[in-house]
Image (cartoon, rainbow, N blue to C red; front, side):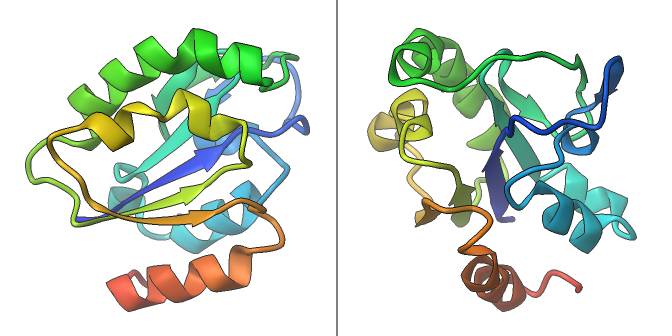
Length: 146
């Protein structure tokens, strides 16, 4: 099992409550959503790092918001994101590889990845939109459908 963590974006679908992966319209989220739309089971392996809510599953319902991921906010989120990593992402069956599509500030919130007992191979792309083609190569190597 492999997993993906994608960062939130300022552009959102609108006001109201959405599944996390359906809320965001920026970065590479629309492309990722399009890639897995016909494969609902793959959404279970996708997590969104939200500046408001921390690390949430693709289908977790969250309300639209306006908050930017700053270094200060990433530090505030680090503890709850660490717990979510341990309880939701790094659980059995443990991911062999983890694709991380987040800008650099988000890494502060993901610091627990470096201390975790389970250490999947990490693929980090700091420009989620610009690096999407390279991220697709990783996903293709996993055998995820297009």
